[in-house]
Image (cartoon, rainbow, N blue to C red; front, side, top):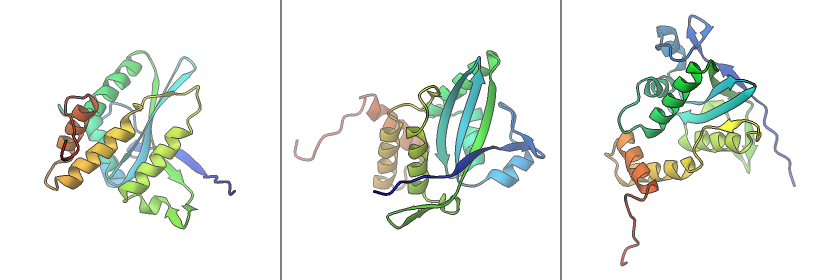
Length: 187
């Protein structure tokens, strides 16, 4: 059996001319220039010797941050996380927004590196790998059903090529809540 070890680090994103981003700061031109790219990111809150983490993946980090700052009506996760970050800030927490850097690694000949984060499959794999490795003393802000919701969202977009991402996420949320029922053909 082979042991898999991955070297990685979290780096705070820079908001204003090299200074770490501070939630809920607006998106600066500097941030736009340097972070309009695919990424795996995390929100880290630290308060009263307790930490909580949300880990996510995105095709465009600036767009994702914009959705957290100003969530749309169908962006359930963005609204939930924004409410939580606002509450943590009100309670005096330190909030960091960071991106993942990791050394390339291979599994069965498939290379995973920051250079191929443009692939949704690579981002989701690494995101879920990191979520599975969180120590128990750190509160996970990701919902346990987020993997299922992402799979349903992706399937909805594949089956309906014209469907917008927000529409697919809203549909997936309804499926997860039992508001939409699926049936097998011929049932």
